[in-house]
Amino acid sequence: MKPLRVLLVEDNEDDALLLLRELRRGGFDPHMARVQTPDALKAELLARPWDVMISDFSLPSFSGLAALEVLRRTGIDVPFILVSGTIGEEVAVEAMRAGADDYVMKAHLQRLPAAVERELRETEARQAHREAQKTLIALRKAVDSLPVGVTITGTDGTILFTNPAEHLLHGYEPNELVGKEGRDLVPPEFAKPLTIEQMRNLRSWKRERLNVRKDGSVFPAQLISDVVLGAGGEPMGIVTICEDISERKLVEQQMFRHAFYDDLTGLPNRALFLERLGRVVARSRRRPESVYAVLYLDLDRFKLVNDGLGHHIGDQLLVGIARRLEQCLRPADTVARLGGDEFTILADDLKAMDGATQLAERVQAELAMPFSLAGQQVYTSASIGIAVGTQGYHRQEDVLRDADIAMYRAKAQGKARYEVFDRAMHLQAVSLLQLETDLRHAVERNEITAHYQPIVSLGTGEVTGFEALARWPHPRRGTVLPDEFIPLAEETGLILSLGRALLREACRAVARLKDTRQTVSVNLSARQLTDGGLLEAIDHALASTGLAPQRLNLEVTARASPCCSSCGRGGSGSRSTTSEPAIRPSATSRSCPSTP
Image (cartoon, rainbow, N blue to C red):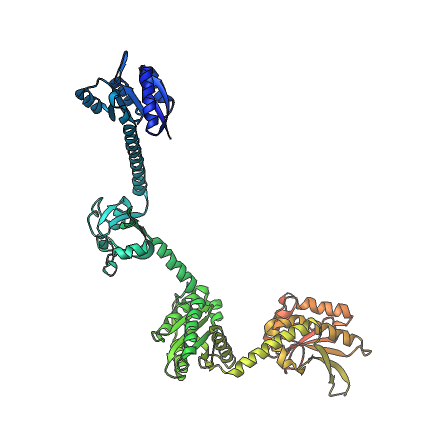
């Protein structure tokens, strides 16, 4: 039994019972409220929802048409069925025009359940239609307010609907696009419409492509399309959302340039250079006959330009060098700025290995010409290391490393030249790196000791003093002489702690001698002379060992002597009094703590 809420306008209780009986026979389970006056009817209508309203046509103080008017004024959508035994055809037509949904003669009450069923279905459909209309209106408002374009096209590609944003994006007036072809909004190469079969398979897809405005200009757009299916599952059309992504593309381009290009010169940076080099290395593994090379350039005396003319002039020089390097390249080559004054060139698909050296010579010739900067001519040169891709490389970082090693060899050989990498250079670099590590450990463990060479007076033959000589008893190499490790100590800054330790040891050793006239000579390097704590280190060595200042001679090698003026107190020059250690230039480079 189907529940049925019935509002009955009837003054005869027997007739009301007959109605209920027929409804039950028709499969309903009626729950009824019976009213006989307009006020009672209105109160019940507003009190609760009803499925159907059944009214007798004629009541003593009320009528079916009056009941229909009460219902109409409330605005409630409830099926209204008249039941009467005396209603004529003209009155029935009048009632239907007034809004009654059906009428049933009391002599044919068996028709009532079918009439109720029919009106319930029609009311449900009517209410669903109203809800759908409300939804459509809300959707239309929402679509019209979207900041992205919305287009609906039929299966044949004809535009059926566009929202205001779509008009603005493509430069059309409202409704001007309706009836046009969707392919009018895209370049010709994308203008082929989809087939029904393609629509069945795609359903929904997203892509980025250029769109065409009414004036013919184009803009990048992100398009998201969905196929609209009918009740039977067949495609009825396509809804496409269009978003102008010009600003996003601009930001992406800026981010790409910032990530892969040098801001100052506009050249590719290290990341992009390594990415391109990686592709070349991978290709060379598949095609061993292909030849490529990497040139690693480091400008000579660039710091002098920065210090003498200012960093802004240095930047102008770097830009000028970048432009000249570009002029030396073939279309397939790449020049990059790694940072500072370092540039790299990837010469791809060389016909022969000497193509790399020829390129280096062109670069040297181009850089040899003066640069006109801030009204004056500036000259520069570059040390160039070359790594040729015939060494069986597997990683681009290894190629760059070897070119870097060769560049340092060129710089060590006199600058303004190029060197081609060979395996001996790599072995030497590895050996030097290991030596630096061992030297750090040796300094930390005080393994570098002082040996003493006597100083004999030619006049008397007496030993007047000693020269402190640094020696490194290496556990694997044996005794390492200063010429090998002192330059490395200066380069790494280890010379400062090493020099102070040897100074204290030399002072301590001579202080123990019985002959208080004998002196000790300790050499100073250029790096030590620029140490702001040198004088304090000397004072501490003398005070902690008790050695008289006049017994300590500090000798400056000829290479370091121009810096000597910076080692005196307050910049006053060298100290050579009876109460202070003597500092004097040395004509030779003796094996001392820091022989350059």
